[in-house]
Image (cartoon, rainbow, N blue to C red; front, top):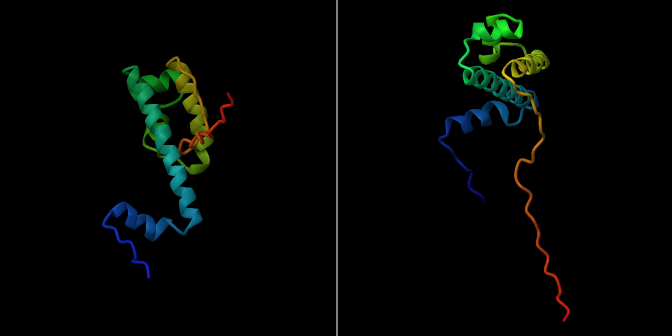
Length: 119
């Protein structure tokens, strides 16, 4: 008989209760993670140029509310594409480019095979 693993981590408990066996909730969680990444990038780009939201908005051709919404992840999930396009415009204003990459979650172990040495 295996003992049931217990935890006191609030994050783990909430994950087990509300997300673990619910694909819809897992999809929502992933969308929020992406939105959080976009928000951080917008903030970091703006902060790297010591710009206010209003200054960035003016240079990008949008409103300060749009910049604030991006930084606060305050938009619908179906607007992620719009957020990416806005991020592209912001990157251009600060002299950057956007790069999306698919990376392995963990480095793949390299299997070393012994070689035979013939003398």
